[in-house]
Image 1 (tube, helix red, strand yellow):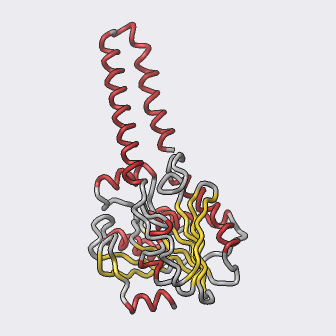
Image 2 (spheres, one colour):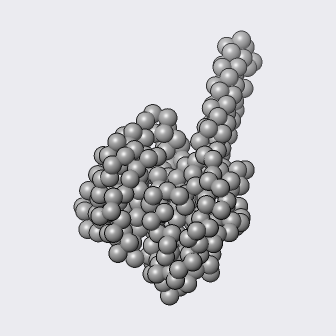
Amino acid sequence: MVMQRAFLWASLPVVCIAPLHGVVGRRARTLLWMHVCVVLLMVALYAYARVAYGRNLPDPPADALAATGRERVFDHRGCRVLCYEPLRPAVRRLLVFPGLRVGVRRMMREPCVRLFLEDSQIVCFQVRGIGDSDRMVDLSAASMLEDALGMLPLFDALTSSELPSEFVGYSLGTFVCMQLLANAWRVPSVSSPRRALLVGGMFEGALLPPDFKVLALALEISNAAHVAASSTPLFIVHARDDALIPVDEAVQLHDACRRVGRRAELVVCEGSHNDYALDASLTRRLLS
């Protein structure tokens, strides 16, 4: 979607200016060169963003989860997927949505997922366009929704449908999660989760740092439009000192849920975006 818009934006001025070549001569050539330079600059910035924000942080060792369960990693429809089975009998199943630059193995070590490792079946996937998934896909809200909808049948196939299901989204994954909840009716064969845990998520993105605000606008990332489209209860957790996605974004999301009558709870924990802590009290509530 981003590349389609860029191609349209790059082509239209050429179509409009080219016929003027015989009329205004040098001025038309100057305008065309200026436009070409701007287009090349935008392409370079887009390529830089794909590399800088699309590359995963280092993963933990492959056997990091061996003490609590078994994992296997594979690709499904271009998405990198991790399937986890605990050694103990499972009491729930989780569909997990990682954040930007967080691979599926690294996501399993995030505090919001680590507390579930003892007794949960988990399917964690990374959308196409970033990380270890198919990087040739033009990342957009539409592509993320397509990936998430395609993951629901796989989630049902890899886990026990007799177990209650929950969704867990972190950072960018909160948007993928919210968008899926709003469109889950498209896959009626999969039951709705009893709860969605959103950690370090945004609302409209108005309070993000400039570079991430531009990225959110370009990819059409906003949870505002999805608040009223689902009734799944939300448990929102946000770090007090989060400088990447300020805690006020979580407050806005919580307030929006209250305005439309959607059940939501907000808990502010200590820490930052990439280094937050879930205390014993919060952990007990999430496991209940």
